[in-house]
Length: 223
Length: 288
Image 1 (tube, rainbow over the protein chains, first blue to last red):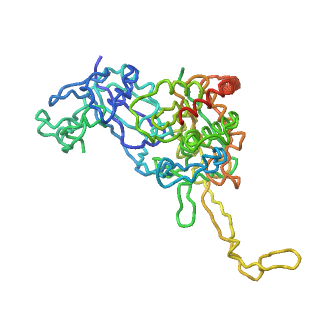
Image 2: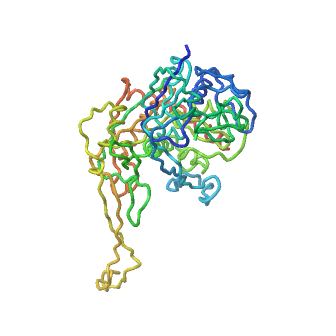
Image 3: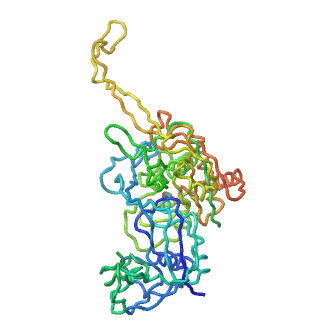
């Protein structure tokens, strides 16, 4: 049964990169479940949005089907930079075949050393507001133990998911005393409220996968 | 196939020098911002990348290299794949599922860690957590995740100290020849000892960390446990200056479910040795 939900992720480590959209996380999980994940590539056009089943409700606006889910909201973030490094271990040179002991270029090519800076956000909680099937959302999130990039080395580890029922629908807009505040990227169209606050025009995706150029369009994003 | 969470408590047996850079001529320990009731504090931590390499990949792969007799017969690309995960150096739109399946069968450790063949990225199934210093500032994470009760932990700064060593430049000091015993430093010349120092986490500090193994078989769990045992048997070091005795950790595993650890390790070792020829053939074939 669809209803308003507030989803909170309690984090045990910093998140690397931008905070993810909940609808994108759930659709990736559902795509994994249906054997449809990792099929999309940047260079190949992807099918129209809506093929992957999701417990989050979708509605039409500006001719586009959009998930009813807000952008990620973090209470406070300490942004900093961490480095991930790699250097070929030349101490293992004696493992190499005599005929294959060559001089290796460490400043370029396949064995280039790196010391890459990554922006990280140290936050304790991320909140999303959505409309959908609470049990379905809970079931999808159950297996998700980490979010963001570089999860294999401990970033974005989720300690706990909390899913609460809420009466208000704050997935796209939140009504305040000053006006209607935009809560997620939406198509730039005439269907948007006239007195909308906290929005700016942009070019990018409004549906998952947010990284794919096929999804790019004129949009408004929260600011 | 199941998902397994392993929590660990590691006690520092010697100063931990897992560094992130220098300030002036002092080496600074790696810290992360932690939000507390008193504002943001910068707390020492162990990176998941370091734990993944030093505690799992390095000991696990070195054991395989020795057990399979690969020393002296592998190429640089193969060594890079085993020790560092490899690089994507060729483009290929085709996925060779047979090659992936064969790697999963013959190299359970690499199935666990993942890697990159010249034309194919292979996802691993292991998430390595960062090491969280057991201190007052990290109380909320430790209570939520490790079931620790708030017992009034010491603040992190009480676990941070410094080290200082000296080194000398032999070329910078005058030598003179004695008739009977060879070259000796000239006692009249000035000493050229150079101090180098830095921060460290003191002995006795404890780090909480763990591993999430997603959809793994018993062989992969065995590979993980076997690698951790090899790491501990080899001193269990993390961070820099291990040659001076720094970075030793004594690790204790905390399992959510009861596992026959000895049995899992034995199964993995037995499996690895029984597929030795096939595993070596796969490695040479993948990098031919």
